[in-house]
Amino acid sequence: MEWSDPAIILSLAPYGEGDQRAIVLTEANGAWHGLARGGASRRGAPVWQEGNLIAARWVARLPEQLGTLSAELVHPAAALAMNDAMALAVLRAACAVAAGALPERAAHPAAFLGLARLMGGIGIAGAALPALVRFEVELLRELGYGLDFTACAVSGAHEDLAYVSPRTGRAVSRAAAGVWAERLLRLPGFLVGDEVADLPACRDGLALTGHFLARDAFGARHAPLPSARVALYDLVTRRMNGETHAG
Image (cartoon, rainbow, N blue to C red; front, side, top):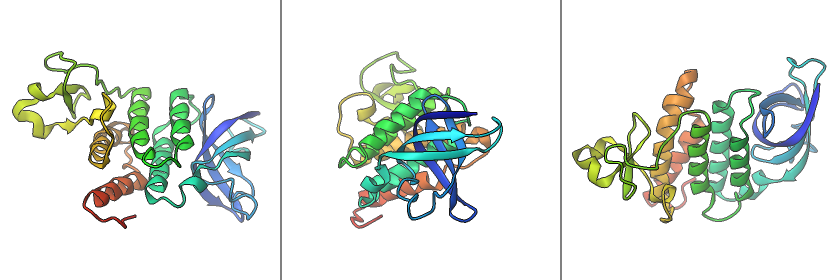
């Protein structure tokens, strides 16, 4: 039993001496577990880093076995994010969310392509954080927890969509929200238009997707939102509060 595919490294854990137990995400095979022999060695460590895009090969005698993963580095996303606290926090959060939310060995091509786009631009200043919010929206939709931002759930209007119902995931216009606005989640303009994805807008986006990830994607598994995802939200909040060296 074997396959060879481009993959993104989602998670790593020590396994014995010098090896790593890895979860990788591929377009055709979904989230896949395997043993990366030598993944923690001096030679293997630069390749086996969360967020890196690799050319992966998995081999096992039987399909139900853990199997062995080998890899060649294609895109060093981890190295590109290393000197930027925000980019590194985004990388860790994205990998943790994908590893925890996606079912094992079930193909989710849109999730793979979305995460690949995010990691491809991880070194571009200001791009990673809004890209993560968009990735999480698409991930929720692909998992069947569809967020609908096409029209107001109350009036049917397509303009001035400013909120999302925390119960249904459907958009609500500013006018229709009325006195209920404080009970709704804020819908950042960059998700429905061409508004700037500044820190406040990105934090609103993280709060929005975080609500549905915690309730649906992780709640269905009786698991909490990953600590790396919580840490990213806290970092954005500290930056907004003027803690310029936060991170």
